[in-house]
Length: 631
Image (cartoon, rainbow, N blue to C red; front, side, top):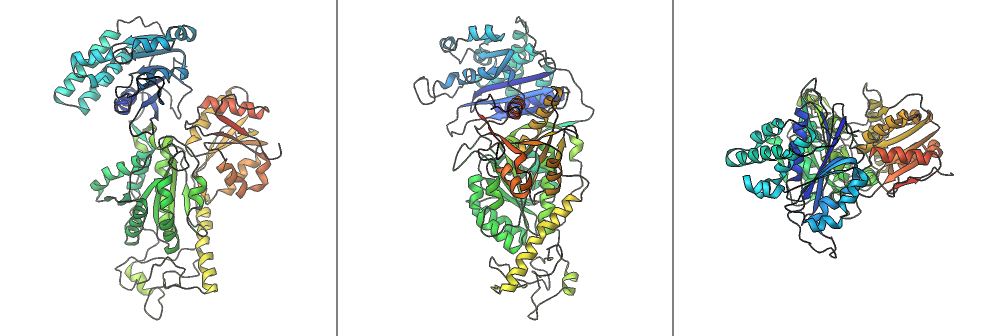
């Protein structure tokens, strides 16, 4: 594993530059010709605490975090407030070292900053004995002193990168180029001096280990992007020019990226006082003739339930983002979980008429964001993109050419003034906006200000003109028409050349794994390992939550004898949805669940699948197996 994959983890305190340093480290490896995947862990407390980022790099495409890691750069926590081991949060200064050792693979490297991490505390970890037992290679380095000598203490993360580069055999020039790009003046010169001094010092270490950076090359230029980047880019290319929101982890990333880029395309970003206002503002912008988007995380999205229902009743297209995090209530704001599926499918009052997509990776995040706008504006309903902190925050390399697509400024099923003049009108002169009889459920709309296009947009059930109506026949006709949109959307999606559902593995495999959202590519790596070990396994990653892809999932389930559903929640919500839509396959479905705030590693799925199929329980304490009904 160490010969073809580097798995580097940098750990420190909130405010120590862990995120920015890891991104630059990953970008340097990408420019050196490697494929990169990052995984981010950070605390929910406002006061901060222990945080880390993993960077996995290989000469082959990397689609998931790995099993553990093989290089730890522990900076310590320079903002630690609890020096007492008996305090609630323990000795925070030591946590970047102490809390990461259990995941360090055999033969791995440890570099820690002796300038901040007290050696007496290290002694209490029994590090020397553990290192001997696990063949770890430990390098205590005073990064703090090195940084002070050549610049400022805050630059000790740069010193850590220099030491890393020397120990893994990485050309330091890639890091030097990045420093020159993002800095200037005295700051740039000091960081370059620290980087070179650390590299030169560590080059003299006795590097008797097998951890090396792989060699690779790219056939085309790569971009290092997160799911949040891809959602923002997909929205821009879909013609979205308005976003409104209120900050809430982890949706804030996508909102911020949109806000940064919209002005260059003539777009507008509005931060408002709460999530009710945010969704309402986006609906108003869309009603006025602009492609619009809003979003939040679980708690904020709950406040959007009322405007979401308004969009469904008035048939106003809008795209909403829901970035899941561990709940209920505030829960664990910075930890991933897939437990908002039922919330997103069914929130708001009455029968739902909405589209919900749950992309499985960065490429799907871009494509399905564009698809969400297309469905919303063609079928005049809200479309929701459901993702989580894992997909939103993790970064990976994607070919730049992937984003070379034509933009789509279309407003969907709207009429020109000439078409409005020929359309049906009530004898009062009002445009019949909500006609009963469209076969696909879509009654074309006018935009405010168009001649002859006047109608009422009411949250009450309404007559074709929009006037309030409680007539039973009208109610049934309007409801039936709105519901026809979902079957029309499903037929359109099923007829497309490219499906949102992603198949992986040998087609003749007799055992299946079903998953959704951000766990998809981790499952796919596990499937490859299972087949290499002699198992017969295939997988299907499902993105269409509503309308549900009955035909595709049904075909997959018919082809296997048993199927394990992998998801990050305690109640098997996607398994429940599948049993609701395809009840005849319920006896084939079992669950592999994880809900401790950490996403699955491929090895956990391999072990959990093997144990469960063989009739046992997973060895990992926080991975749960729930057998099929009747087993």
